[in-house]
Length: 450
Image (cartoon, rainbow, N blue to C red; front, side, top):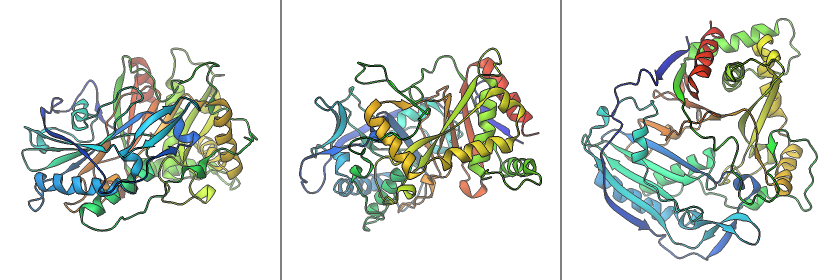
């Protein structure tokens, strides 16, 4: 019932120094020259200028030793740089417009090959956010002159290996990144692209003139005169934080769903959509809201942010690369969260998603054109739960596990699948908080599941 996977005070038997040795670093170029151009980035892309790193672990396959995998990945990446020409370019800040853009200059993407002296089975629990996993993603960032290193292959003594991917978030959201992985897998098998990407980010451009039709409390305007702001939610200092992974089993999620359904009683007129994501988000929200701060303030307003894919809501191509996500939000006073039912919180989360009409989405994008702001809330729930990175079928098999390289942030709570995959409907909740807040969060997490 809401088990703790691992805690900082009871670290599992893991090896944090993976002793990775780099053998080769090369620049992969596209097989043909493409026209140099500047690629427009939408207002959604503009606020996601930070790096995202993922690691995908594979067990040994005698038919595909790491050396062969490396050659196939080099070839696949080279071919991919034609439809994904921005990956062969560089991110830059246009001094005239003060907007980020991609300089699609064909400079190439880097590919790194390394090895570890350990076997895959020796490095410990793959679900646990091992700081050593950062060694599996080689990167080179120089302020705004960021050089993405999309692929880094690290082999283990057992024949297994890890594929590390480092990109700037401006390149992909979770959905388009999975499509990129599917294309790499398909090209590595000498097959055509699985999904032809749509690179027209003007589809999410602001209207001219901008037309802000709604209030947007989920967004924060930056101070006047600040050219490159720091995101509020996305760049919170780590500080002295404890972290824990809370595992919600299928039974736990079913229990939360039943609690929400029971709360409706004979009232079938509620607007709550009782899904796994909504009940988990509501559960995490009430635990986080009621554990924040040294003193409980019943009048304090707590706001949770959560990403919504807007492709279908705007009839955009499902293959649209880049970022087609916006932060939906739900807000309530702490006393309402403490005294109210889970159903009410699920209803508020549902309303946040329903708020994302085409009119609201366009108003949000236009707001960004005028205010150059960032998402603003008490915390962000970032869900990797059902993105399905571990479902991508490479020639050498599906990943044993796929995970983000975790940098612990107080204002980000991460949802991600368990190592057994999403079929069991289990979810891990990664929380990083100061010790006293963590104690409250943990007590509430179990109390509300009892």
